[in-house]
Image (cartoon, rainbow, N blue to C red; front, side):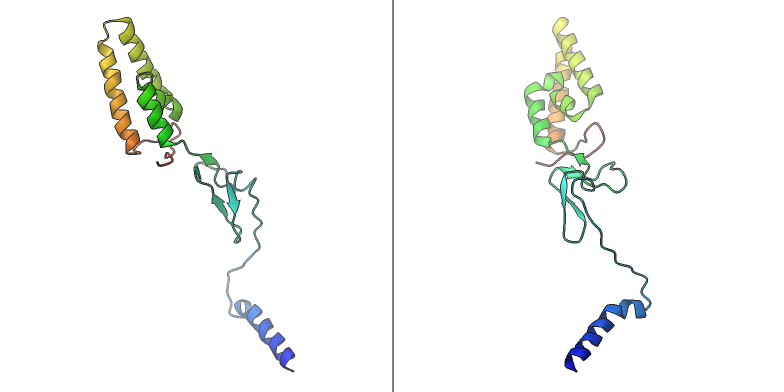
Length: 147
């Protein structure tokens, strides 16, 4: 008798949302880390994709998460510090117009009087500050992975 009462109670609890007129349906979502997390995340117990550090949802196709790997601000900063006259940080970030202009200005300065090298140095110092504050985006417009 107690077992029958327990089974009826459990059945009533399971049907309670349907009887109450709830329009929320729960379906079991199968999450696949390789396809839905683009190989850059894992599936949590609730079936949601959780991104690894450095992977974000940026211009992902429908149904896919974690598809974009962020560029690292530390790498951009170090490249700018050591190769700033040639636009090292901008080349890494995919900001090719900036990098090409910087390289052109530097080469022009080396081939002529050298006055344009001061422009390139100033540009490098400004970029170092911007990279240090993480106030830039990569060439696709995505934010950089913070320090």
